[in-house]
Length: 380
Image (cartoon, rainbow, N blue to C red):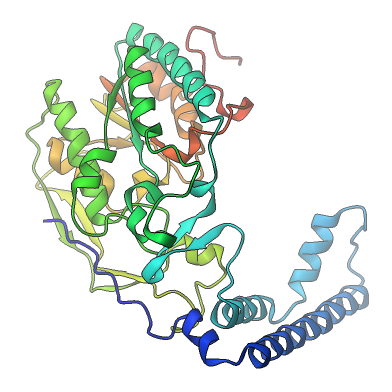
């Protein structure tokens, strides 16, 4: 049975309350003094690093900034500690964050990219749907059926926790449904994950991470499995999901973007808490390796690697799923890698499930988003 991560109540000492207790002028002077002190300390550290590099005779060219940066960082004895302290002070005293994140209500953190206006998104959605339609036809010619599953933005699913409790102006509330319609018009099978997630009570995404949690991943996996079962893909394998340890803190990727993953409690938004789980086949010997005649192969982003998503999908479907998703895969990174792998050429799966994060759809497609052309022989 899947467990739902328990959200720790946010610390009563929030940046806003700290600021309210400080006199306006006194709080500003104190914060400025702290940051100036940190800057002076940082300058001293950098000077020491430069002296150490010169003293040891390291052969570093000024024309290679990356090598110089690496050499200097190697001589900074307290770099991570210093950066973490400054970030914690900025958050605690000034309610400040990095440009990559936004603080919502009750300690929720959101990725800034999910909140940007998307006035030109319609053109991008049509271009991507048309490209996926071409790929779908090429896969079908090889006996593989494609199922596209778009993982909705955290900002869409958890909008009640945004500042003001609503999506910002310029966010296309119908954008998800629009892309579903475009895919269907292009002849692509797709599954709607936004609707069942929105109907599920409780937190479906981590508060301090961009990804769905155990509850959200389980809902998405069972929704996909329901579609695959309707295609006659239900298996008879039995899986069980068990806890692998006690409940503990889980430092999310958004906390790391803020540089606060190692900050003490009270100096950062409270981390999520969950009990980790793992899904195993009962008495099974399936290896799940590429090229082993797999029925279902999963490609996509890091969403496929969070919240025990693969395990929940296997348990709901009753058969092993080969997971070829990877971290940092952008729009189609893991898809390109899999379709150009000899494993696909030699043994195409019956079904290819392609998970795509919603936030990757709005930007105009670039060269890095180009889908492989299966009708063009690969260069050797």
